Length: 254
Image (cartoon, rainbow, N blue to C red; front, side):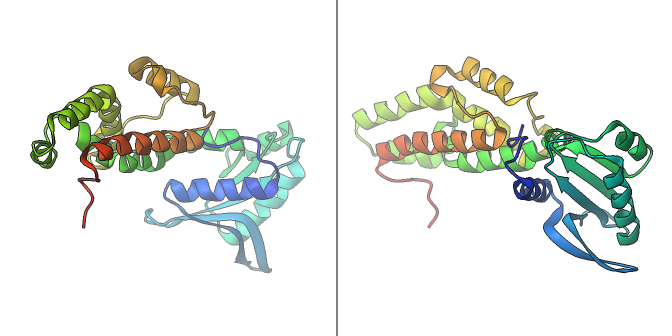
């Protein structure tokens, strides 16, 4: 999962849904007033796909209830969708919809999902636009330190004493594969056809990292968002080791 699928309250659910929509490329906001034939109505989350020809509109009802959502809520949401002209409507809840409510939404443009199901629905897009891009950006300098050919690095390396050159080569041997992983994950933002697909789960991805890189790269996070933060922190710490060899960030732009 990207985030905790069981938010503390309705506001956290609302904020999480809105953030997810923005991160996958929609333009979203919470508690938006929309005009209807009978006045105005406030929706929990409103989003627009500005990239689509017809500017597809989404409205979202967030219900952090302990019980499944009844059909009466779906009926009311139908009216809101019709009167606001929304193209797609989501009812996002903790426990999903009751059986009658699920039946009612069949063959409609309404979708009832748990927050966990919503995250799974958009994981692929989020993985590529947030995780891979964020990790790749954080690792850009590290990649330059470990890539096979880098003229600036080699030119400055020749000016260092033999001991410092040995220290750099030791770091490259230690972290070279990690840098290659970072490079593979970031390539999709430059060449979309080579973008990596999202892993099946956080645990599966962490296991793959440990298998490929060793126990030093065993991460603790249980959600992708916090795992990204953890991996970025690790990248920054490793990159500082390379800076220390040269006494500065040799790739820092003026």
